Amino acid sequence: MIYTDRLRLCKLILQVALSDQGKASRAVYHAILAISSYHQGGDLLYVDQLKRTALNELRTDVVSSEREGVQHIAANLLLCVLEMQQTSGNNSGWVGYISGVKQVIDAVKEAEPPVGSDASLVLGWVYYFEVMARFVFRHWRTEYVKAVAKALGFDANGSDSCRLQYILARASFTRSIPNISMHAHPIMVLLAEIAETAMYSSDPRYTTPEYQRYLNDLRSRLEQVSPLTHTVDGSMHNEVDHHTTLLLDLTRLAGLIYLERVSRNFSGQSARIDSWTRQALSTLTELDSCLCPFALSIVGCETVRDADRLIILGLYSRMEARPHLQSFMDIKSLLHTAWNLQDLAEEGELEYIQKLNIVFSSRDVVPSLI
Image 1 (spheres, rainbow, N blue to C red):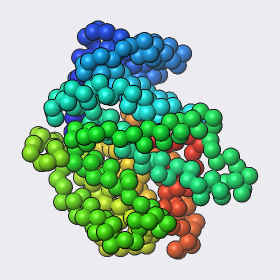
Image 2: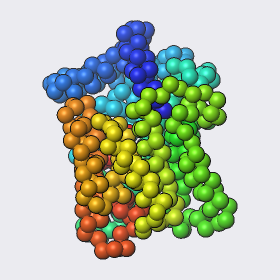
Image 3: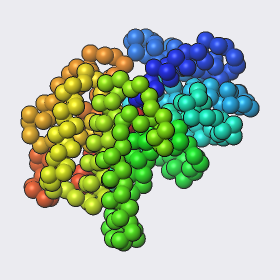
C-alpha cells in the first residue's frame, strides 16, 4: 500500500530516473522534474514542456520486459500525480493516466513478480490509485444528479474532456487485473470490496440473506484487520512507523463508516458509527499531515459539531504551509460543501448516499481521493 512503502517507492523512482536505461526511465526523469518545477512555483510553460517530453518518451517506448514495464508504469503514475496537482475547472486528465497504465501492466504481470519485489511495489501503487478512483466514480454525476441538474437547466456532464475521462475510466474498470490484490495491503483489498457493494435497493443482491451475510463478514474482516499486516495472507509484517500505522487505521475506520452507511443506506445516528468517528478524530489530532483524502472526506462528512469540524480544519491549517500538499485542499472545499448541505437540510431530509453524490458532483471535474 502507498502508505507503508512510500520511502521505498521514492527511492525506486529516483533509481529509475537516474539509470537512463531507456525511454521509460527518461520519462520518469522528466516527470520528476515537472513535478518539482511545479511545486517550486516555476514557469508553467516549462512544466508543460517537461510533461510533453515525458509523454513523447512513453509514446515511442516499446515495453518488452518487466523492468521496462515498471519504468513505464512509474512514469504514467507520476504524470497522473502532476495532473492531479494541476487539475483546473475543466480538466480531470489524471483519470486517463490510471486507465492507460492497464495497457502496459500485462508485461509486468506475465513475469509473476514475487510479493515485496520492486515490480510488486509498483503494482500495489497501481492498485491503490484504481481503488480510490472507483470510490469517486460511484458518486460523481450519477443518473439521479444528472436528472436533477437537467431539470434545473444545468449541463451535468461536465466539459468534453471530463466526459472523455469518464468514459475511459468506466471502460477501464470493466477490465480487472487478476491477482494484483496480492501486492496491496489487506486494508486496501477490503476497501476494493467495499467499492463494489450495492448502493441502492434496486440492486438484486440488496435484500438477499446471502448478501447480508457477506456484508456482515466484510465488516468483521475490516474490524479485525491490523495495520501491521503486510500481505493479504498475513504471512509477512513490516516495520511500520507510528505515523503510517495511524494513517492505515484511519483508512480502516473510514472504510467501516462508509460500509455501514452505504450498504444499508443508513443516514441516522448510531453508537457504532459515532465510536468509529470519535476514534478517527482522535487520530487526526495526532497528525501533522494526512495523505489520505478518502479518509478525510468520509470522516469529515460525519462531523456535525463545530468542535469536531475544527479538528479537521486544524489539520488542514497544518498542511497548507506545504506546497506539495496543496492538491489535498480540494477535499477541504468538498467538506465545506458537505457541511453546508448538512446544516441547511432538515433532519432526515438528506440521505447519506444522496449527500455524497451531490458533494462529489458539485465539481465540474472528477475529484481525486488519491
